[in-house]
Image (tube, rainbow, N blue to C red):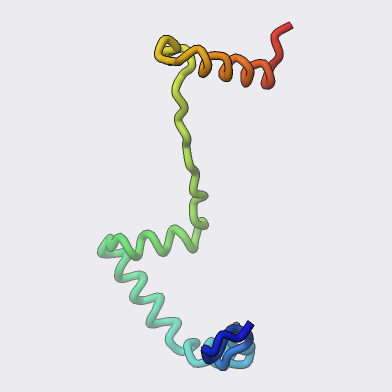
Length: 102
């Protein structure tokens, strides 16, 4: 599927997850700064900085789950007089599929 462009997909240099060795080296280099980072977080918490409080709460207690609340119109409040006969028939058929009238 070549259309003349260079690097038409596939593996590219520098793409993908870095090797574990690079990650371990970075963690090792950051280790001596642990005390500085915790001191900065403590200072932020003492000053009641919102970023520090948010970070502390998320790491200490976990991020809250995001929830989406969908509010539907109450069928009791819907004005069926606005519907055409065809729309009313479709609505009736759909209601019967959900819970058939005996």
